[in-house]
Image (cartoon, rainbow, N blue to C red; front, side, top):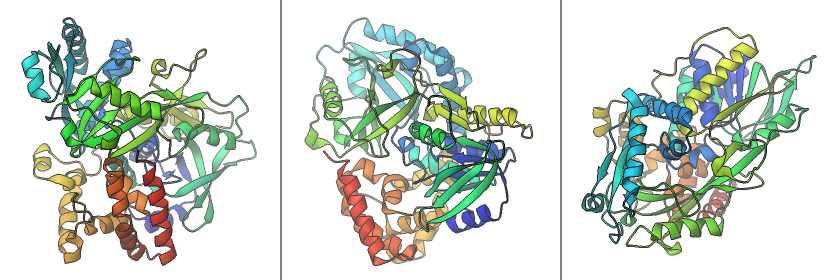
Length: 524
């Protein structure tokens, strides 16, 4: 049951787990699902909320990576395209087939990318979403009506996947629990336990709500904390020089829907400094991103740099008749990629592979770094296979290629769901019935958005939301869509949670202040 009290009860009554996973992002949650579905006893701990870090701050794409194809990284592209197809089958409620346009302003451009995307289609094999097309300037202008017409000689269209990253993370946590795992948010790993041979034997965790500390025994501990992996490696007593993780920051700007006229997304395969830029419709807004900036120190709330914001705005101005400005930005969010640096130059993060890497510590700790959302399932399978081999666990094969993720529904069922209910998938009918039980549950939280009082209560009771941020950033996506709009309703949400979670007035006030400070960082 996706209920915090029940999960804590299960945690306390289990003497030993086969696998403990540290980190509740894409990698950690995927590992928990894979391991639990194989029959292992699994516990996952997330210090904050599921997908609080980079896993809720992606470009919202499930894709093979046209850029990786151009770099010649065929293996990664094939893997990602296969995983894209599996995700559409296993989490159809969150997956959207999105048409992209690469505009051509040079006579050869559309033929060059047209050829490349033909290979992209071919590599997709039977899991292809649809073929790419070279189109005329007239058709390109029909696809995106506010595309600058001067010099436009056509373009290439192709299909890729789009999703809601934080909702998928939540559904993976629910799936892991349904498979028998314990998964807890707001549980911080404070220490690594070791046996007489100085081998990792478990973790010490702190319930950050109650300050209760527990020792959890395990056969295997897996470190899936992304850019923060070195913290856990140090706790485990890594003797070798810590892993060279190069955090790369990517930011995204969110604008009103009017800045992209049409249902087609824009893809710029090579900007002035060699990056890729996407302009994508998402929840009736437009997401522009991303950048690729090396930074020195990881943070849970990375700050967008002024030059990153300017770069995206300047690039967008080269393609749209209506040029966006800083005043048009509804929200700006930043995430960090945990890239593993090769020997030599560490500064050019665009050239560092997005493939994943598994590291073994002398103490027996397993660490997974690198990768991306699209390939989370395959990464998880690799890690669990590795844990079985290296720690002599009972041999079993992965089930996740065909395992339906919580919320999954058929395409026809998805078409029957509208607006904010679509992402709830198979839970939508229950949610709608729940909202009917009390007239006040139907009350909207903000006049510009469809979110209701009932959805906040649902998030607290059935989606393990514990804070205002949990609700407005990840159960809803309002912080990412309209930062000021989320500030406007923070007090309403805090009042509902105060009553639902039986908290004090001081807790409510503290929540409003904390969230408001946080959300102001998403405003320009």
